[in-house]
Length: 254
Image (tube, rainbow, N blue to C red; front, side, top):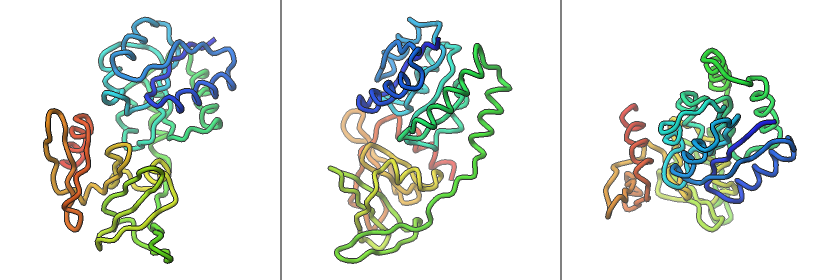
């Protein structure tokens, strides 16, 4: 019997994952669901015999990588996330699979089968070969985007996208000529279709083209904001400190 922990800060997603796991492996023991770094560290410490951890990457108070920096575990880790730009870093943390949301039962089944084949313990060679097989996948990203503007459908190059914002189910794409149009996709679907070295989901509502970032400013307390280049130089998008640190590293590498 496998013993599992779920680290996920969105309750509906956590419940869906729990139900899928119990459907695929009725015998699995799920010791709990945690939503932040502190509780996740405590849960792992309290369960040293964990076999597998299903972990989102962006959780309530930062990146879940911080959990594994704070506590030692031999449990296998399956990251479940909407952010494929973290794939390389994930394999520093006992990662055996990296599933992009929304996670299908087929993908979860493959991950469980892989974990069962690796038990009782992974070695470094297993981690290396697993990471290579996932990172080297031939992923094709979209080159065009179709925007609804009034009664017209406008076609724009992906490179022309400055940022994308979603609110109350309405997703708008803002392009370099200063116009914007609606698109019938969720942010998760969109970010998975865009090249990760160019586009980054900075918060739950916005994706930015990192080449269109003008500056990152400090607000009150620990607040920070991404400010864009013209024609959207009046736009300020709120980010966390963890996102700010990651963005600064990303921007310094281009």
